[in-house]
Amino acid sequence: MFLEDCKKHFDTECLYELLGVQKDCDGKELKKGYYRQSMRWHPDKSNLGEEEKQTYTTKFQLLNKAYQILSDDERRKIYDETGSVDDEELNEDVLKAWRKIFKKVTKEDIDNFMKTYQGSREQKDELIMHYNKCKGDISKIQEYAIGYESIEDLKAAVDSLIEDGEIEKTKKYETSTTEKKMIAYKRKAEKEASEAENLTNSDADLMALIRGRQKKREEKNDSFLDALAAKYAPSSSKKAKRQ
Image 1 (tube, rainbow, N blue to C red):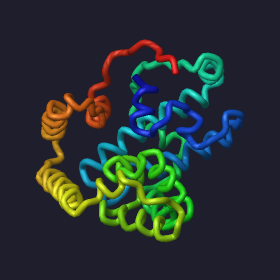
Image 2: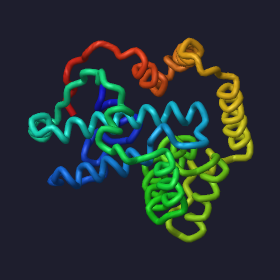
Image 3: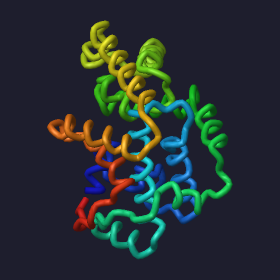
Image 4: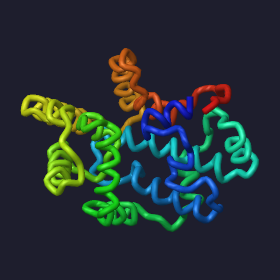
């Protein structure tokens, strides 16, 4: 379900919060919020590993649908009054839909946006927000925080915030950043990078990888790859979900 996926990947079911805007925003402010959020999670960013690209693709799809709902006066009115949204799959490619709105944006623009974002006060504030929501669990924080090259860079950023007194070190942070666990995170990232290098450009190979990972992760209710699979083989319509 759409709202459940929003909660899973963005830790919120509020579409306005998802796009970083106020509930009374006008169309211009809504479009600006969508632009900023989609630039952060655009799957065409350079140097994304296979796992990261799948995560970005999922979040990009969710942002696109949230914008389509709120930019439609009738659908927005229904959402505001009932908290419900339709769960019908979008048939149009989300990247194609995005480019219809922001036609002049290039891949270089996306990378430049990230360069500006990295190290900014905005990135620090968002890291603080994720740290507090995840209670310091770095394995969960890395699912939400963007702009960090590795888990080590993410830990260094958190450590800096702790040293500056902007956040307090939690027990969960200490247990999730032990030497043993940091080594495990690094090995997992290296394994995924190796899989990405061996992946060919054919859709058959991509789908085979998706299905293999889906089978392993179904027991943990992980829907990252389900969302990516939906991009290539959209599922049937679902009923509306109440917020």
